Image: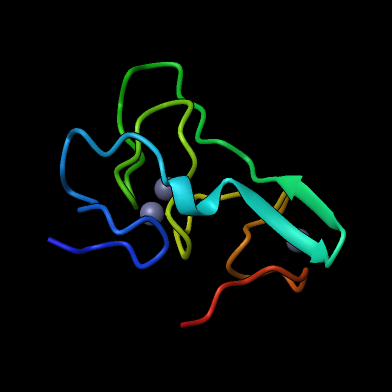
Length: 84
Ligand SMILES: [Zn+2]
Ligand SMILES: [Zn+2]
Ligand SMILES: [Zn+2]
């Protein structure tokens, strides 16, 4: 059980299929790009943050790819990491 701070939904809830608080990455004040959605050939949920295929990961998910460099977002150095 964990409530996501970005979308305020329960991450383990099956009805939480995407993170509405993590749909774009802010590069500069006027430059926003969409975040990378979770892709799955099966209908499995994201093993880390439990979103459904096609949904946006919750921030901090280790399966989320950075839309800028395509590497793992939590370890890359691009901007847009959320800290609360
Ligand atoms: Zn979320
Ligand atoms: Zn995820
Ligand atoms: Zn990056």
